[in-house]
Length: 227
Ligand SMILES: [Fe+2]
Ligand SMILES: [Fe+2]
Image (tube, rainbow, N blue to C red; front, side, top):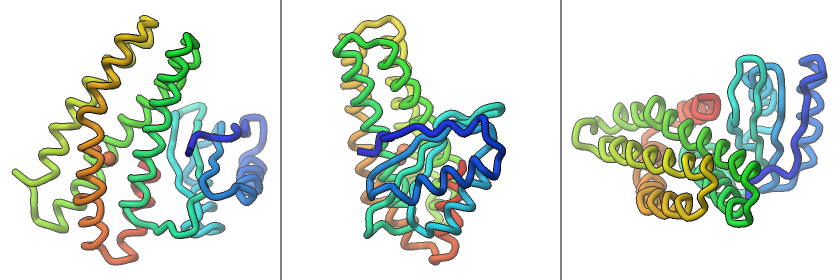
């Protein structure tokens, strides 16, 4: 659903023209449609322009970080989307689910270079998702609720360790072009990840949203997007 319909390569353009081209193309996207952008500059300035021009209009995720070259993903949000942790990180869960399914579909059909490229995007995205939760979201939740040791973020951090272990097994299977091993890795991963995401989307994210003012929530979501 949120896989890109197009990749825009802005690497040969000066920064201002690159930004203008991306913004113009974004204006044509329908809700749920997404672009991948290849750029020579890091995306902070572009994201600031996007937020100014289309408030609440897009979700944003870095795919491959620089330095030197960046690739990022921009998705038009649905009409009822809100700028809150629940909307943004649940969207990222869906985006990652779609990448894993696409990688497995390529592997099933023996298209290994494509499978590995999609699995790499999935891996980078999942590791980044875990990192922004542990470094930005969980501290915000812990500060707002006063729940630290023994609270839900401790359980989530433990599950992140298992999730990343299963992720490494999938990547190794993709490198070895072993579909059965990749399928086992996927089943093991989803055995943890589905319930993990559900707990985050039903408890941790909405609680964080509820305990922040509109202004501080906006700031938190932008931090997560750029993290
Ligand atoms: Fe998580
Ligand atoms: Fe998550």
